[in-house]
Structures are given as C-alpha cells and as structure tokens.
Length: 246
Image 1 (cartoon, rainbow, N blue to C red):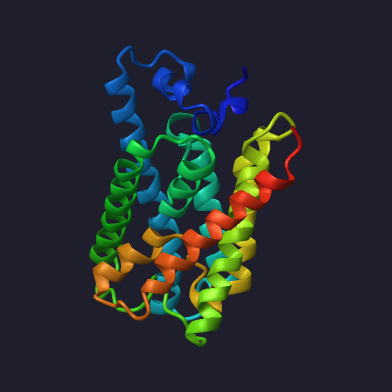
Image 2: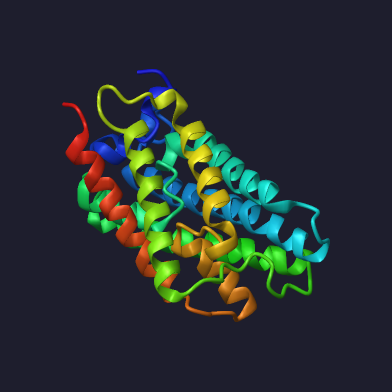
C-alpha cells in the first residue's frame, strides 16, 4: 500500500495502528501508541497556532489578514498537519473527530481520552505561545459568536457536519481518493471559515475554542463550541456511512 493510501487507515482498522503506520518505526505496541499521542499533541499545536495567529495579527494590525487570510491560514494549517502526521496518528486534531470515529470507525474507545488530552494540551500550548508572542493577547484568536445563541449553535453544527462528511468521504472506503485527503479537508476548512468566520469564528473543533479561551479567560457561550461540533461530527459521519458505496 502506498504511503498516501494508508492515510487514516488506522482509524478504520485499529489493528493496523499497532504497526505504527506499517513503516516498522517501533517494535512495541506501547511505543507506537506514545508516538501517536505525541503526534496528536504536535499536530494540534500547529493547527491551533496557525488558525489563531492570523486573527490575532489582524486584531493588532487592522486589515493585515482579512477574512481570506484567516480562512487560508486555517485551511493550510489543517492540510499541512494531515500531510505531516496523518500516517502516524490519523491527524484527528479535534475531539469531535475522535468521538465520531470511536462511534462509527472502530477507533478504540480506550484511546479516546488519551487523544483528547493530547489535543487539549496542544491547543493550550499553542495559545500560550501566541499569548507570549503577541502580548497583550486579548480577543484575537478567540471564537465568540456575533449572532444569536441558536444561530451560532446551528451554524457550528452545519459546518462541522460538512467537515466530517468530507473527511469520511476522502478517508474511508475502497473508492476514497486518499491521496487528496489533506487538500480536500484543508479546502473544506477554508470554505467553512469563509462562511462562518465572521459569525462564530468557524471553530468546528472544541479545542480550537478551548485553548484560546483558557489563555484569555474569555468563556463567552463556550458550551456552543463543545456541543455543536460533536453533534455535527456524529451526524456528518453517520450520513456518509449511510451513503457510501460498499
């Protein structure tokens, strides 16, 4: 199997995970798992650092980035991380993804808290780094709704549904074009950010919101970004599973 074709395969067949992406990088199951957790930490750090940095720069230097720049930064960050660690950990980077895959993709339940812990720590670490670099770190990078609670909830649900539908469509099944997975997912993040960025910050990811919230102490309607993305991920994954070809 080509390197590109094994992207995300461990998420569908967990027994492959113990082989540490099939490259023989480690001979012990525990060592493989540790590498997967570290990869999730580093990948989430890069993703949050890239996605949150441009709004901060734009806040400090008005119109330096614009919506296009913010959307591109988020999409590119996700794409390069998937290219970098997708073959190691699957590049979840998102508790909503991890939970959805544990429910529908045979991702081991026992791994879920470890993955989510790595994602939370990676996000918090990136947010602290940004706070140090761009002090004072006030509102840039924090996802806060500018619309009503109901509208924000539904918008985050819909864009996460779209994201997970695409993630599943390019990652699983015999007809999935896995070589383009990173590009397709990155473009989806870019599109969703263009749609929802001004309204909710286009989080799609509980830890994308949690890290900057912890760094700034801004928890305004934070529950939306925990509940809506998880539900959107579950429904997006189940929708693709219903439609996919055998």
